Amino acid sequence: MEINQDILKKFASGQCSEADKHFVEQWLNNDSWDSISDNTQVNDKVGAAIWDNLVADVSPNKRQYWPKIAGAAAILLVCGFSIFYLSGPALDNHTFTNASIETSKLFTEDHYDVQLSKNSTAQIDLINKKLTFSGDFIIRPKRDFELLDSNHNTLFFKAGREYFVSDSPDFGKIVAFQKSDLAFLPSTMQIKIRDQFQSI
Image (cartoon, rainbow, N blue to C red; front, side):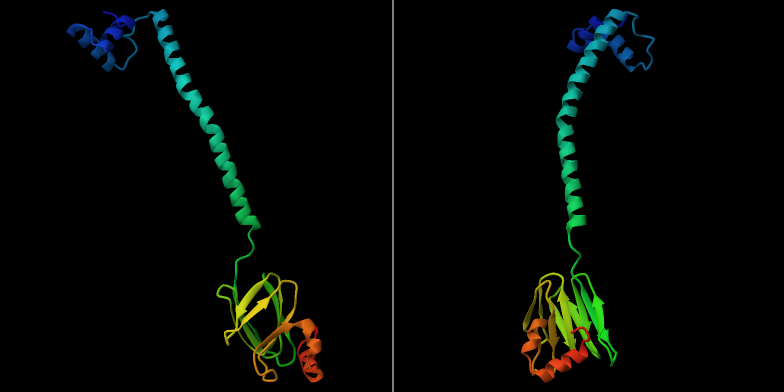
């Protein structure tokens, strides 16, 4: 008996005799191709039907998912680029010390420049918005920020300006004012500040 399309249809619909059913089951369990009849017409029809079903099942999926995958990849690429290249440097926490008794010292950071007078220290914590210092310093912000000093005063700093900050006993409290406002101080204090910072 040959395995052909008619016997396979009968087997699939449950209309085979027990002998035919047994024969088809043996054929299905056989891994070799030798039991298939050499009827090329039937094989061509079966092959064409299988190919049409495969193309119909696979092609729409490729067409439907390709634009979605490409769109998602483009969005991820743009987000990654903008986060990596366009975000500014992270906030920082730095401690500066000038142990010199003769000259001021300049420090350059991502968000500001600091010039410490002689024998001064400053800890600038942009993460927690805190400022701790002793002595005098000039700060040049490169971005806007605010800091809370040790007396719980909020000091506002604007980008592009220069600020003189001091805890000198001459002022009686912590002061922070723009460098341009130094002209309104008494002349003795102006001279003292200019002696500390050669750039003023």
